[in-house]
Image 1 (tube, rainbow, N blue to C red):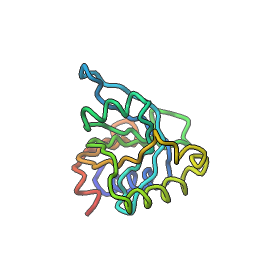
Image 2: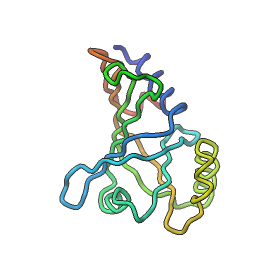
Image 3: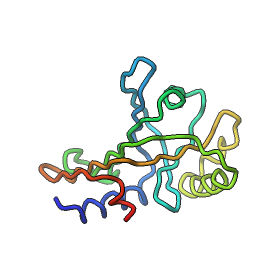
Length: 151
């Protein structure tokens, strides 16, 4: 699989999907996986709305390294399903303008989050992607630095 189809796949997954598996590192250095919802900002960075009560949030407060696995949800066969693992760092948004923009983007993709988005324990986080690993099925695999995604 060449880079161009892989880039198209990742961009489609980021634009069209809304659920992902988030892997963080716990205090002992073990991987911890959880299911999360996401949206994307204008730069196609994944945006997450996370509760400070969740284990993955506690993990990210200690170590920002994480990966996000996004799969095409409308394909029943897992082995042939398009999927991408995004590897990088996830950190909370701090600037009011960035938080407001994330809120708008997130609620557009996940309107049901309106019921909890303003709870005190929830914050918006953004992922800075370092590396991407794309699988389109058996033998159709490619990895590339995130710079290619944003070029």
